[in-house]
Image (cartoon, rainbow, N blue to C red; front, side, top):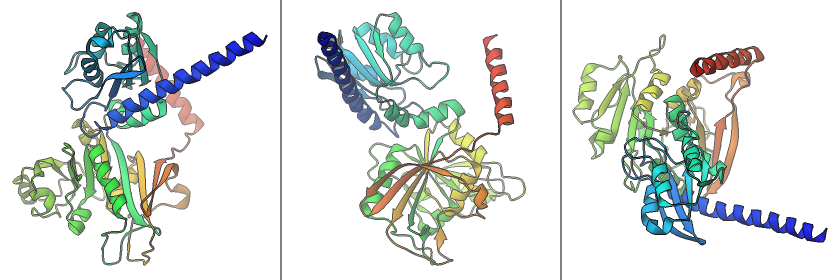
Length: 407
């Protein structure tokens, strides 16, 4: 009896040890993958590590669409030593031929014994096929290591591949009483240096920074990350009526080709031509019936068709209100500074007419941390529960879709 207990305890301890080892190497792969954020569109950021006898013998991350995937980089660095080794990769290896050959073929050819993944491919057409191919070739597969971190890493890609629309993060830097500028419109600087450094890091991790015309007119920002770190971040300016003059920084600096002026048919042709002379893209987005404002769903579809996975909105208050009301915000970043501005004429973080309390958008707090003297709060929209009748109709519809696809 004692021998069985000892054997069981050893088995549990061994399992914990193996899990800890898997998590250690997977976190290294995840850290590598994050170095590719903002570079890989329309591909997801991926990291990989080849491990043998407890040592990393090859590692890499995907740097650009059309170039080697993370697994290939890691395997090339490992060379012949990859035989009988373990491959840690943050995303299920691809099994299709796109701009580059499928990774599963190279993995099988290398002699890798075990493949450890964090998350499966979110593309329904490919999900599970890569792992099935590896298993069929006799390679052991371990799934779900550091799953939560892996899912967080590919959230933008998952949203884009499933809906064709970008993942939208709405950032609002404000005083404790929810003001983004004083009564004169002055907003520099509400938050501290470390918080502003965090925002530049965010700009490096996204594919585009989006603001409204009011922000450009008030602050004349460049909206580029400092330093850029090899990124070519797009700047999307929402200007329904052509209020932005052609001499602002986002139109005149060396990165003007990375600027997109999104407007509507209400913008005079003369102003659109003035923008185009600077080499920027001009999008004509349909306007909403009634108020003439830009159609946010149409804008999101346009951004998605460009292959932009992650968009960071930095204001202003009217733009924030429009995005929230349209239901396109996937994540909120609140940066709260330890000061009170006050005053009914000071600019609030969210403009518009607001909501009734019973209809106000509800949020779920995900994470909080101190950045210098400021507080960062990360939140996500809390989806309202569907009514039973609607849920039943939706389930019936899904059943019909599945049956039609199986024919």
